[in-house]
Image (cartoon, rainbow, N blue to C red):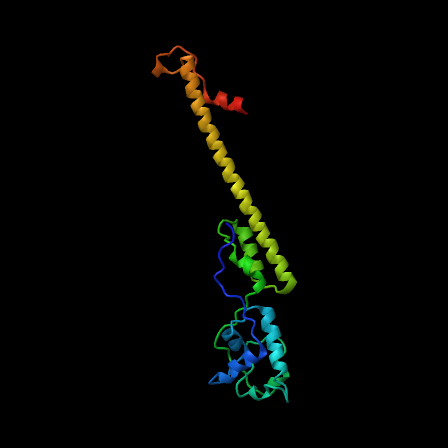
Length: 207
């Protein structure tokens, strides 16, 4: 249990100019999802803001208006209203799947949930898929990580109590052996008629 080393790269802080450069250097028309994936922009919030900023520059008379149609095409998988800059332009199917992976949820994705109960694991998996961004994403991520840390501390405490109980058991057995020899309770010492002390009695006394 606990946090694992993150093995993923967070979203790159790509700019509108960098996004335009991806389209300009492409040998054939592309969709925004393809370009975002080339720049490793995975965070949903950054995908939306960068796309909106880029399309704003693609309006008539804009800095990158010349890219529309020739290099930039609308996506067949786009949700909601398609930008007016794509009016009359046929869409393309993205060549790569658009990955949505909130930067705020890196902590949640790094938690080893293998030791969780099935119900709790399913709940956390469901939360991770929400890909919340901004303050809400940070808050949910922090709550999940803190909960996992608390569970880890409880597991450490339980391990320590188990070790202490084992040490106590060994001490009781050793004391029992000494007392049995002293009182003649051990047949190996020739005291077969003596009273033998039971370990259970010592355990009760120790409590």
